[in-house]
Image (spheres, rainbow, N blue to C red):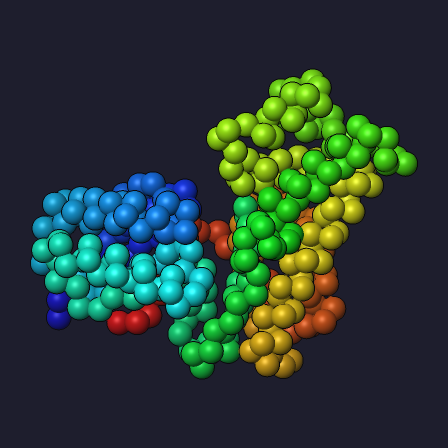
Length: 312
């Protein structure tokens, strides 16, 4: 029997990876381009990114047929988002000579969750990177989401949220509104190679500002925690609580009861801040003692490939 061919796409806000593999994992093609979140760059730009990747894939492999193509795209947060992105993807797929038997189009976190737990098993995935989001499935096709509402309305416990909290402390110190000083100011200035508040303001309000810029500040938190800084520890504790609330709400939505379940964790905040991960685990296990924590150790494209594989 001829082996099945899978095309997987991980479309994030800053980069998009397309990989073509056999069902046994042999890689025929893989390339990374710029982001493909339609909410960020618009549908036309997404079309250009995906069209280029698909044509590069075809010209490099000369494959005639793809059995399953899974497009896991960030920014699919509503039915209208799905409709818009689906139209773009279907247009691009029609333009390349591949014959694609089955196309899956999902939110990137949704796909990653199914790639981790499978299509018929319960499980949950919490991510804290630039933003924060949790998804859970009951294993019977019911998938829920908490968080992921963006920096204007949420993203509690994320790198962006932590960065804002650090900035707030630094400016409160500058005003004399804190009873105790914090090493966070010194660490922040060192990271940004600045010496004054005026320079910090210039950095913060530069024309090419991005949310990732604020999120990058969160990298100083762990060292401040190790030094016993009270303000840093307070931020870490609150971040863990906010992430726990995302997990708790998601589990309640799938009517989780006490039974074995794996909670997968991913994102820079949870991977590089042991205190936040440990506190999240502590808060969660106190309420849900049967839950097992697993830190994701592969790139998202691996889980998206598995999600497609499970649908064969």
